[in-house]
Image (cartoon, rainbow, N blue to C red; front, side, top):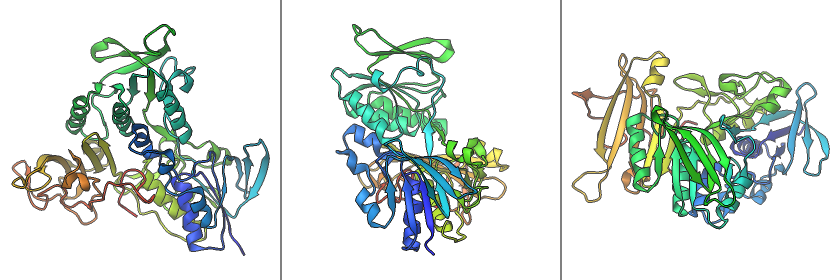
Length: 467
């Protein structure tokens, strides 16, 4: 009997589930419900389309619609899943022409992803893309931003947030010739790494002309009169309560994401860490034959247990696990170490595993050592320093995490996509007299290097190394 699988969501998790199911059972009836008309696009690549390095938006597609349909799956584009009846094994769909229909399934995979966080900034509730205020998380968001950027006299940008997307967009907008101000509420940019490594990233931003304001809270955004030289004014509070104002033609809000769980919750799915859908390691929810994967679900972290890690590669692997189990298998998602990589101008920053404060919270007794090494032997021309922080457990010698910042383009840059810690068998190494010795000589030690290139859809975002 043909098994009917429905995947909700056309990004990494949903597409990976559908591809895996068709790969294992070519007779399976697989339908993917996609809210827009851009399935399997690399959202992580959007900053490089904005910068012009990716010359056409279609190049962001890992696979075309024709490629996906050639695998035997059915794509329902511009269609929204509005309700799941878990008892009846049906999902209600709303089509682009306002029709409603019911689709029966034997198993369903929820891959609704995440949505951008809208911080409590005055004016944000009534200002939008038509006013030059943007959030960036979909191809629709991208087209709206590009329409703003292509208007005449767009010269100044303010980016609220200095995480991965915010940093990449600072580079992208600078490459387009805009004057960029980046505002971060925390004391340092890229707060997923230690402040001393974040400071290296901030120096790179400043070197390329980005005005970086840390320890600064954005209070409001207001539209300026048409007679003004700029479209918008951003009011903020800087260190020590100092009032600050910045004029801009475009404002980008990039302060993180939250799981999109509306559909799952309405069906009766239980939630876990940070309001994400609670799943086991087989990607099963508490509902019968309802699986979930990707940025909408909790993630098994191999050092922390249940966590929330909205990463593309994690979504991809969780989707494959869900697609396989939706056919009746019992595969387990091996887990994640939260490996993340970002390029900022001529730097690459990466992290994997735990930082000190995370290790303490998890019950370890951490010891962190930071060192600077050359990306290749200094006697050979063109070497550049790589700053590396290793975190290990002081009691057991277990390697818990690594952070790295180095130049792009040399040996370190080619593979500075820092893979995962081989923590199951790895050790912290010889840390003597405050510097790192063998086996950590050079850039990576007991790390599995993962090429930072994001191609073929297998590494769409970051570089989480565990299957």
